[in-house]
Amino acid sequence: MFNIALYQPDIPQNTAAIIRLCSCFDTTLEIIEPCGFNLDDKRLKRVAMDYLNKSKIITYKSYESFLMKKKNSRIILMSTKAKKNYNNFKFKPKDTLLFGRESEGVPEKVHKNSYQRLKIPLKKNVRSLNIGMAVAISLSEALRQNSY
Image 1 (cartoon, rainbow, N blue to C red):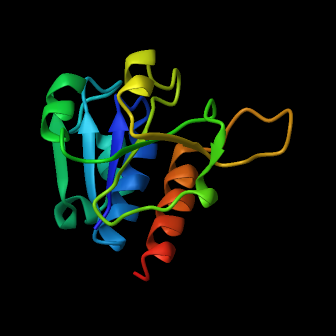
Image 2: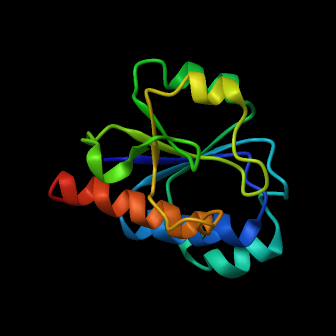
Image 3: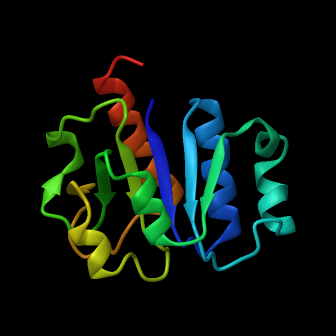
């Protein structure tokens, strides 16, 4: 199955919603620290509810430790700065879909270490989607392509 990775997430409620999404689709969530909140934050627990105990969550203390674990994997960075649309890309079941911080995205080194950079096309003059929606859209397309 696919993995969803969050690079240093800022907002516990968004992360919690993504935990629920990943739990519902039997997808592993990988969290690259440091986060902008504590992983035992009550806001995260309130939104994640009982899905927190049903989820496969892996945490990494740094981006470098994440990269070491993923050295033989395709990391697909979802970014508003990408040129290629997500629906024009062929996802494979072992792909890791990586999403940046809500406040800052990801640094250039993350862009460079990604197998592919993809975007969800939006109308002009809008900044971005909520990260939970972006994860849901991207994961849905990856699952659809692979008949899950």
